[in-house]
Image (tube, rainbow, N blue to C red; front, side, top):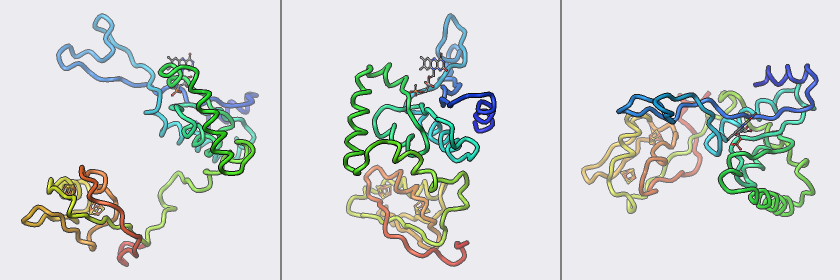
Length: 226
Ligand SMILES: Cc1cc2nc3c(=O)[nH]c(=O)nc-3n(C[C@H](O)[C@H](O)[C@H](O)COP(=O)(O)O)c2cc1C
Ligand code: SF4
Ligand code: SF4
């Protein structure tokens, strides 16, 4: 998006509105083989929008917010804004204004009043006068690459065995998608090998009982540090 935004700037644009919808195919019918939506047996690629695209939109807005060539350009952000918190996130990544399409179609124009009052309450709670004061405040701590992230410590998962029902999902996920750090006891209770665990938290995510939580941050084994 940066080259396109820079080209718009060179061409005389005062601002950029982004993102648009993302070209998508909703699905394919297994009986007719036609993609959805089917219009008399034919389909077409359409635009994906709304809250599902927000993470993609935030990434693009941050990319432009990081670009020094675009620093004086007004960025009007959109893509999944439904609430004042969504709007705030875009502003913290450099947006000078936000726009809403899909959420208005879903909930009506009145959500703009909720969005404004939510932002005003947030600003008052923070002792701020206007959103300009938080524009771009989140840009310095987000990087395009993961090599800036600290690797000297690990946040290990902590198991609450009284909540555990022995479903084994943590063991399966760690074995096949993690680092083979979990084994199940004969009573189907998980045991974690701290020498193998990398703190990815996949087990925390999959546990249906919320029996796994983050523990404190601890030093990583020497061989894992950078
Ligand atoms: C029904 C619909 C029609 C749209 N029409 C246009 C359009 O004509 N031109 C355009 O640049 N973007 C159009 N968009 C894209 C929106 O302006 C917006 O960039 C996108 O939907 C992401 O924001 P949202 O998640 O708030 O909907 C349209 C979006 C929707 C849902
Ligand atoms: S945090 Fe990751 S590596 Fe550690 S036990 Fe859980 S799934 Fe396995
Ligand atoms: S996923 Fe949760 S409930 Fe299932 S075995 Fe692991 S800790 Fe127990």
